[in-house]
Structures are given as structure tokens and as C-alpha cells.
Image 1 (cartoon, rainbow, N blue to C red):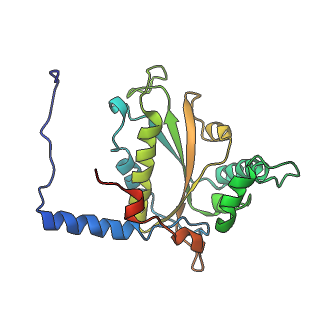
Image 2: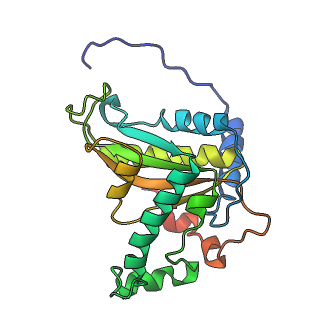
Amino acid sequence: MREHETVPYSLEKLDDSESIKRAEALRDRLRTRRTCRYFSDESVPREVIEAAIEAAGTAPNGANHQPWHFAVVASPEKKRSIREAAEAEERRFYGEDGENPKASDEWLGALKDLGTDADKPFLETAPYLIVVFAQRKGGIEEDGKTQNYYVNESVGIACGMLIACLHEAGLATLTHTPSPMGFLREACERPDWEKPLMIVVVGRPTPDATVPAHALKKKPLSQISSWL
């Protein structure tokens, strides 16, 4: 390898039984994670959101350029404007604007068991919207010029870590991806070299919150893995 400055690799050493115990414990906690569409307006400490974003910021990424930005929206006025713009796109997607749906019949059929539609009240009710941006350029200095690498892969991993940390903190989440999402760049006052990737809605569920039974259907280990 090329010569470069290094620091010692640090990782807690565990015996096999402890490794298995911890992996299975985290698996079991993450198995309880469900997408929530019924959020209360109960407040959530800012420190929890900050800690989750810091956790996301440790994700592996191309060339250590860390090509992500997390815009946290808490302003009621800003959340309302995002909801209005998102619902306008969603009405076009579902064909609820009187025109032909943007989505194919197959896509709409796949969504049927989830009960989704163009109404997104959670965008306004939940205490926080974390709008995730992928930085196509910028480098670690965020100069807007330096090329970034493996951007979608890097930001995707970071989002997974963000959601896992928020779940560990006892918060409900929902990932929302209106299409197109260009309006989010203007709403969050981000530069044109950043691409909005998703909205992570964060808060506490309402006492009567439910999830579609279809969401409980998960592929077994034998179907999602192979051993060679």
C-alpha cells in the first residue's frame, strides 16, 4: 500500500458467544422497526436528532468525501410548504389531479396493500423532517467543484444508519420520496450541486397508530442470502 498517515485501528474484541449475542439483539430490535404514517406532534429533543445525524456521518463513503447533507426542518411554516409541494407531486403520481397517473398500473397495484395515497399529513404533523441531500460535487471541503465518488451508495448507507439510530432512540420514521424532488433544494436553501434524495419523517407515533399487515411480510434468510 502507499505510504500515508495512519492511526491505530480500534475495535472492541469480543468472543464468539458475545458477538452472536450482540448481533442477534440488534437484529431483534431492528425487526420491530416499521414505517409509520401516523405521527403525533409531541416534541422530540434536538439532541436525539443531532446524535442520529452524527451516527449517519460515520458511514463508509467514497474517498472519505462524506457526500451528504442533512437539512433538519422544524419550522411549521417550512413543513407546511414542503407538504403542499410534495402533495402536488403525489397527486400527479396517483392521478388524483384529474390527469393520467404518472405511475404505471403495475406500480399502483404494488402499492395497493400499503394503502398509500397523495395525502401526506405527517409532513406537517411530525416534529422533524430530515431532508437528505446527496452531494454530487464538493469534496470534504464542500467547495462545489471537487468530484465526489459512489455518492448514492454512500448516502444510502448513511440513511440506513440514521434510521437505525432513530429507531434505537424510540422514534418512528418514514422515508418519503416525492418525484420530482427539486422543490426541496429551494425549500432547504441548498446549492444546485446537491441532489435531494429523500425526506426522513421523524417523531413519535400516535397512540392509535397502525401499520399495514402487508408490511409484516419479510423475506426469510434463505431468500435474501446465499452462502458460496
